[in-house]
Image (cartoon, rainbow, N blue to C red; front, side, top):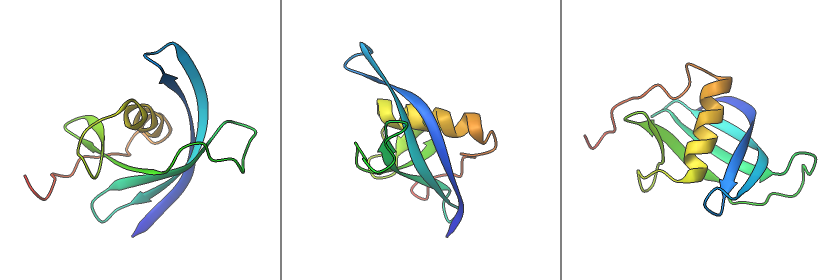
Length: 99
């Protein structure tokens, strides 16, 4: 069940931190198992030009990871940090059903 929709803006370090890109993205919070679908990644001011495919992330053991692999990426960590800044109570950890 979608419980919140909001936008985030964050810096994404690319190419071993040699290139910094500011991105905007749309976030949908789902409360069934508290995860976030992030999509429409775009450069600010270019609202109709998504530059990355969407991702689903959740916080596990204090780290923002992809819901499918349960592994972090630079993108999941950067987007998750932006969620934490905008919504400090977001990402409350719920034990993964397989633990």
